[in-house]
Amino acid sequence: CLCWVLAGSMVDNKSVTRLNLSSNCLSGESVSALCAALREKGCSLAVLDLSCNNLEDAHAAAIAEVRARRYRRDGWVTS
Image (cartoon, rainbow, N blue to C red):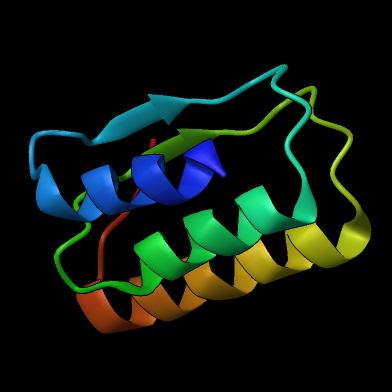
């Protein structure tokens, strides 16, 4: 899955702070890859646009959980 490659880049490349993945028909595997990257301490991503992907409720909940944990851990605020 290309998202695993992208997810690895999100952790390795500290200059990536915004990522627009809108309208990409993301799958559950893609969301899993993104969540794994967002959990990494080295991930500097602050803004992630996943609009128009028809994500299932479980996928949205997983991303929301990771975001909440990162906020509690790092104290960052997104725009």
